[in-house]
Image 1: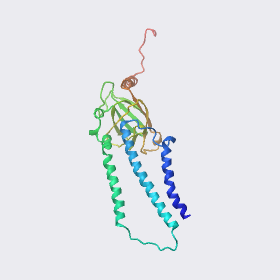
Image 2 (image 1 turned 60 degrees about the horizontal axis):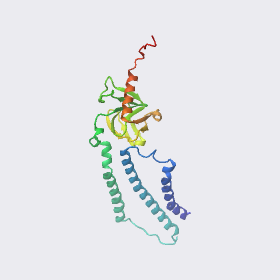
Image 3 (image 1 turned 90 degrees about the horizontal axis):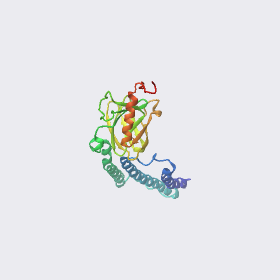
Image 4 (image 1 turned 120 degrees about the vertical axis):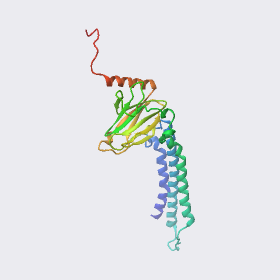
Length: 267
């Protein structure tokens, strides 16, 4: 039985690595390839950390298996060796993890600043936001500027509104302002690798770029109440002309008073 546990800690890390290796082909991984340039950089950081953690995990499990194997094959009459510790080993397992953590902290700084620091946003993303996203129990409310205008920080009489549909131009960096109308929520677009908390009382600028037009999921990733599970929307990334057409149609729909002008045929 002693040898069984030693062999277990030798072979189960191999099984774990194999399962992770086949996970993408089985649909057990990310929802898709990152659909934004910044998302690809975030994936790169993830795989770097995953590699470091994998090497550490396999190494510690093999070390544990080796210790158990030595104990399993050791003669029961053999005298045990007593140790009060090793300063050299303590230095190694203190300095090496510290070095790895400092390396990760410095390596990820450029990507982190691109996403979080407004001064590091792309030039186009530092301009006026294309939409304001308000998280509220339990929906996403969008505020757009009227066609041909820029979105102001405070609501304007001709602003346009939509619920659970976020339309943005594709092929260029776009910025939006994220706010919360009640409790804390989290804006999470998994295919774009964008995740940002919406904190009550704060206006948080966020940006992303979607090179390929399409529809992408928008979820709330912060438990915000009984209806949290159904707080989802769709991000529509569209060519500029289609995006402008959407705003025009939304303006007409919002301003429609229900009166249809009479035509000659009606007379």
